[in-house]
Length: 133
Ligand SMILES: [Zn+2]
Ligand SMILES: [Zn+2]
Image 1 (spheres, helix red, strand yellow):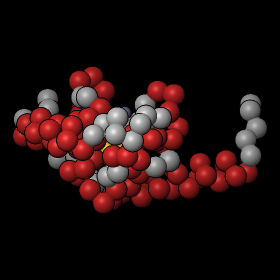
Image 2 (cartoon, protein in one colour):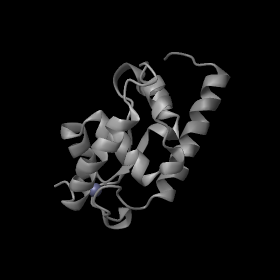
Image 3 (cartoon, protein in one colour):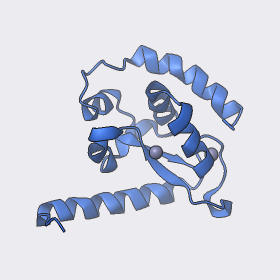
Image 4 (spheres, helix red, strand yellow):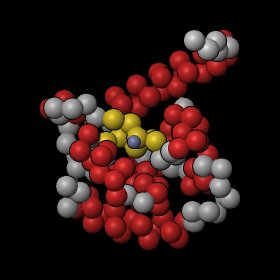
């Protein structure tokens, strides 16, 4: 097993605590509003940052969405990245930071622009209205 430094271990612990607190703060799915306590499968924290840069997203709330299992699968299957930015802006506005998200994805500051996010908000509202299933 690969050894990790104490600093790294400590930051993983902090991230775990932050993620647990985040899960407690949101006890309903951000898309379909279903409550976590009656779900047959546990709700999940999704990272907007995927692939090779996912580690950056794991530790930072700016990248997190809180979803039920059904909506989580839907997001992976059919939601654009910009739609995910828009959902973050709508449900967790104090922790929405488009430029920070772009940087976590190792992209230019305006690779996803605010105009694009505002436009995507319309389709997100439509999905929320139809509860995405
Ligand atoms: Zn849901
Ligand atoms: Zn996910």
